[in-house]
Structures are given as C-alpha cells and as structure tokens.
Length: 173
Image (cartoon, rainbow, N blue to C red; front, side):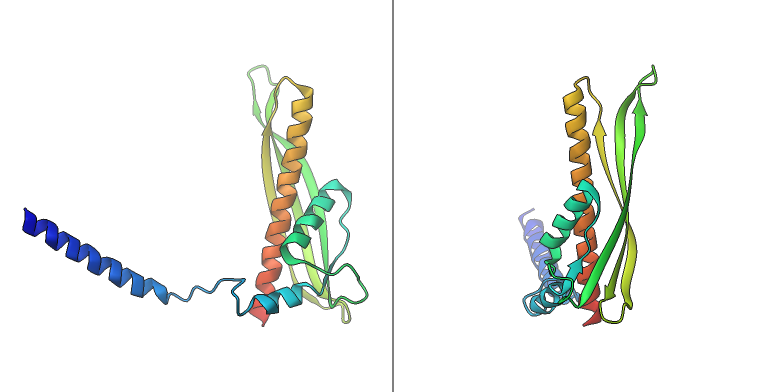
C-alpha cells in the first residue's frame, strides 16, 4: 500500500512538472503587457469619443474613457470613435394573471472607429448587452432596478467596445 502511494506522488509530480513546462509556452500574450501597454495606451489616447445621446450614452462614454482613455479635443485627435445606441425593455416573465414580473433591458450599439484626417474606417462592429431586473410591489424599487439595469448594460457595453478597440490597436501594431 505504501509503495502504491509513493508511485502516485511521483506520477503526480511528473504530471505537474510536464504541465508547467507545456503551458508556460502556450503563446498567451496579455493585451496590456508591460512591453506593449505604452503602445496601446498611446494609440487609444488619440481617440476622440463622439458624445453619445442620453443618460445611457453618458454611462457608455464614461466607461469607454475609463477603459481606453481618449482625447477630449476632436481637433488634435488622430481617431474618432462614433457609437450609435438602441435600447428596449422586453418583458420576459409573467404571473398567471399576466402581470409582468421580470424585464430584460436590451442595449444594442454600432460603433465605428475612423481616422480623422482621411475619414477612413479602421474598424466597426455591433455589440449587444442585456441586463435583467425583477418587478416588485414597490414603485421606487422598480424604478431603481430599471435604472441600475440600464447602468450595468451601458458599463458592460463601454467595457466591451474598449476591449475591441484595444485589441484592434494591438493587432494592427
């Protein structure tokens, strides 16, 4: 019995050692690695984010600025990011008496990054973010939950657009 557990420990050690060497060179390269962080941050600091309408647009803009930085001056920026959003509230759960008990807040966006000088489109895409919230008896709680769902969806959307823009600059360098 003792002999069997020692063999198991040896095999486990060898397996871990093999896995360590195998996965250490898997090609994973972080987006914001120290050697490329300055390149991505420099490129993204030259982006002017066009104002997005509404309170949800403000949340997306703030999330984008937090994620990629961005320039506050459209004249000195090298790139312009334009985001167009569409939102809707969809009921998804009902009681037997057909009263709604849960909503999904669906936020869709189309974004385009283009050069300011040439107006050439560099990258574009579409993103969808969904945040759910429940309906309760308190009207105040329902309003608060709806606004929180909007904020969560907008923050998620800004983060995702920022990730895609950063990835574009990483791959284009």
